[in-house]
Image (cartoon, rainbow, N blue to C red; front, side, top):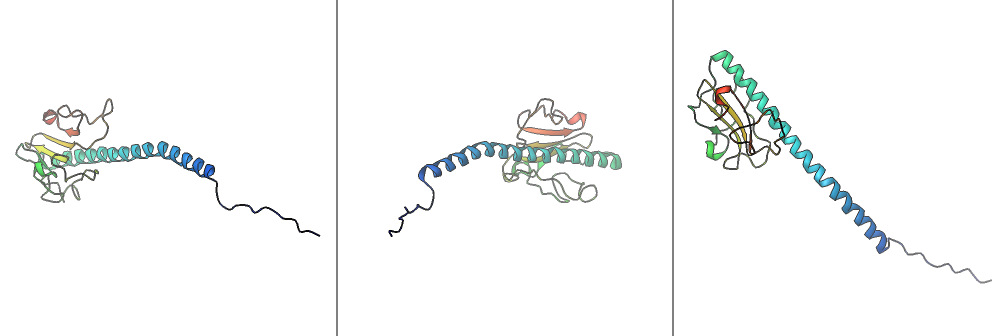
Length: 167
């Protein structure tokens, strides 16, 4: 009796199968990367909005207790080099808020700040009025943005007292 000879099956994937898998992965990456990038910018902008609201509340609280806003002599102070490179503690860019009103001053969520020359958070006050700005950080400027900055409409968000709105 002759034994039946069976052909050997090759182990592994064919070139066609590999190309199909690579094509499917490329399509998925093309779909997912923009979605993930968009969620990162939305998260950063949500953090900026939260920081602006927190600063507005802290500044109004300071005003109620002291009768004036923390005064910078009418000049901009910020965490960026061009605005003094102030920190986030008691000698930070908003004098007199830390530690009595806030634990520490907020830092823009962008990894570029405060290393950028002009970006990050900045504050200006003459004691009677104030303006707090997230400069060069926001990634979106939606219609009806409650943080609209008339001085920097496409580069910043702000909160301010009525007299500081146009600074």
